[in-house]
Image 1 (cartoon, rainbow, N blue to C red):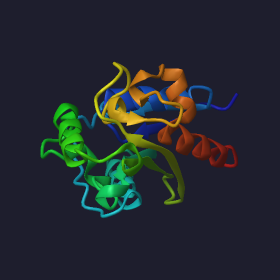
Image 2 (cartoon, rainbow, N blue to C red):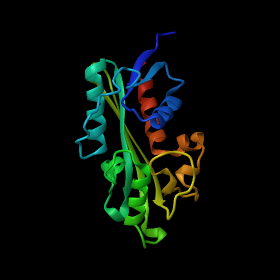
Image 3 (tube, rainbow, N blue to C red):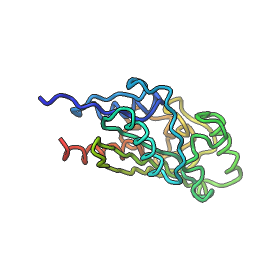
Image 4 (cartoon, rainbow, N blue to C red):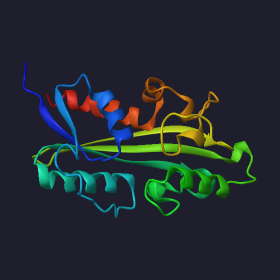
Length: 200
């Protein structure tokens, strides 16, 4: 069997890393986090105005140090009533990077008083896979639902506890396996996986 190729994932988020490793575990590549690649302190400024721009910025920033294949994603929640906000600013919506509690509270406050039918939202994920020769694979995954009225569920992270799926459960009430099957990141990763098959 061909030696595994190294793929560095441009994230320091352990939850996100676990999701990606789970979905790529059967692939003939050795998946490492940026921390495992010795880049724990590397911070890449996300100055893009779209998920695609930010994902590519992260991939190029990591690859400049590793020279390997790099997989990077940018994702967030887009809310219809807020004209697509928080969008690319989802992780720092309340001002502090990665503070899920405050982000959730701010979003619930922003939609206060709105009925269910006006709380439509989507989780969006764009993944790019950058090869050492500069070739880029891109995939986009979208999961529709609506912003609930309270937090439900202990699973997931980010906005998962307040994002209600069509079947009535929040993303935070799903098992990891259930989430991978329907999540925006799961959908984008499966598309990337299909594209990757043509490369090996």
